[in-house]
Figure 1 (cartoon, rainbow, N blue to C red):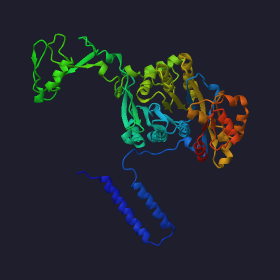
Figure 2: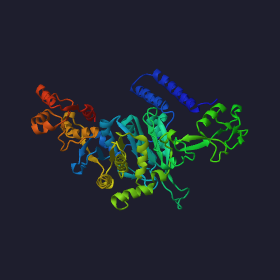
Figure 3: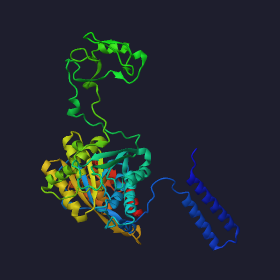
Length: 546
């Protein structure tokens, strides 16, 4: 029988605290004794705190200071709008914590698939925290990274739909800590797999210990009981294992062992082959089924004795009867999904030169993620978008798969102009070069000061950025689009209805939640059969609460 030593120590401490509280309570009461009793309550809370899990020093980022005094909003860079039909996709430039807080308003519970490739916190490169590169000598290097990830993953969980999943690429530096953190955030019961990706083929001969040839991809579900991966399509190699040497009208087949590693006496009967040879299982094995079932299988031409009819019997399995797809394995080989060199080549093909981004993921890797974890109308989010591989993969996937209407939301900062010069430029060039039918809106995160201001003092500023949130949530475009319109104030509604030309073309109207059209206005909208969508009040409430 095991003894919980930590529990005993905790109970001893609590008993001592109780004695101290009894002593203080019996003493003359004043302000000091009240404070001491309050301190004891805080100590009790700490002693009764986390029993198991990840412990790290929590740190604040520079963006936390900004968000304390400002509310984030989106502003479109209309010069970068790509209007090429198809699904409307979005690229958001800015700190991804602010972007995620905005997505909480528009996409809570709506994202089917999140793939992220966060900074790996390596000894070689560190990672940028509060606009400062964290180096290997920073005592709190790991705690800063965990604080950084925790804030973002907590929001990511809220964004996932009930059948949503998240894939997180990582190397060995933080995999153990991140696994524990994800168990806490998503629930250990929602852990699906730790996928091993073969990222390199050639060994590193200059490696100090072992040659690093793989990365990890952690996979968690919002609710594992409600999410099931798609099967992977069968490959030509898999199908090539089936043939039809006896010209069976049921088509190609393969054969498998008709014995099992048991010694069931009832299944030890003799079998005579077509050549006249009699075979029986060995002492440690038996046939897989009874003699009666064997005779039925033989009569149905499902037993194979080899071309000469003298081999040990084997059972036939027809290609037409097997599952037309395979369950994805947890080891992903470079030959199947590409490696880092392929990722570099993918990017070089787009830009015509190397060096645009360090270690980009190959498009085929993200296509595998899309294969097993997305549906035709899924929204895919990548809030560490980097070079834009996720967006590129979604565009290619839609092009190659009839009926696929997947769309993406990418978020990344603009450090060294990466968002504008690499992420956006890649998507633009891919659409142009490959002729993909897809559109893209480019938003920037801006901030409106709210500290020491009443809501009514900055409400008008916020209203100017509601349009972007509506576009983002609904995947639509208001710019130069006569079929949809948005009105947020009574004056805008009046102007909209009085503009006969635009009003007559409109099919859908997004209206502020607090607008009350007059009876005449309602009749005019109804007579034109314009669909009304009320903008959710939480757009305003969340903004109002900061």
